[in-house]
Length: 269
Ligand SMILES: Nc1ncnc2c1ncn2[C@@H]1O[C@H](COP(=O)(O)OP(=O)(O)OP(=O)(O)O)[C@@H](O)[C@H]1O
Ligand SMILES: [Mg+2]
Image (cartoon, rainbow, N blue to C red; front, side, top):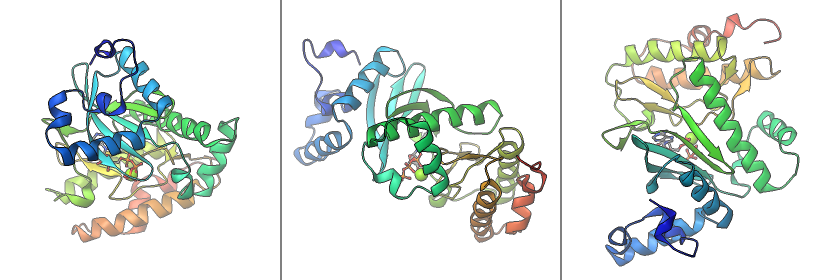
């Protein structure tokens, strides 16, 4: 969508989000809901960031929310060469309430000015750089394309325009293959990218097209030399081992921890 569509004025939030008149006015109830959604996420600075990213060619227009929560929303966007996923963090204190202390500490260090907007921007940048580091290490994560302020643009994980489900909500076709591959991804994360996810759960792993895991929501990751890294990896792997057991996989917290490279982290990271 070209910003020129709205000559001489800023597009209204609902116009950016749902660019065609038809989409907006299909039915009154839906229109009201969309207006509310748009108003909640897209304050003025966020709209400007969206506009800048569009003019940079990061994506063309936002289409619909894939997911919305207290902390932000993820939207499907039309992009150059297919779809893209755009994550918009809400400016406010929502993400910081559930943040583990280690992440909060890092963030305070990163954001020089202590206001929520700056902290949210730092958090967004953190997710962007972490995705980049993981992608480079060959871990299956959405490839990050760009970010500005509280808006992050990344690869859309889905098939034929339909977003991939979280493993929490999906039927895993081959749990054994899923487990084997997850072990490889986690091992690369620990030993090549030298990071620990810190918030690994069936909510933050998508079931990719081939039935294999795609890790998302990586902003709480810490470096393996962080004093709490091993503890976080223990927690991540024991949560996930429990989930895998329910799928019928023969594993244990110790087994997944070991497969994830937990016993091979060198002294001091
Ligand atoms: N790159 C992507 N491609 C497709 N869908 C995605 C992508 N990233 C996120 N999603 C969808 O958006 C949801 C929320 O993303 P994510 O976990 O990164 O955000 P969050 O801040 O934890 O939000 P929530 O609190 O709602 O889980 C995911 O569960 C997934 O369904
Ligand atoms: Mg999540």
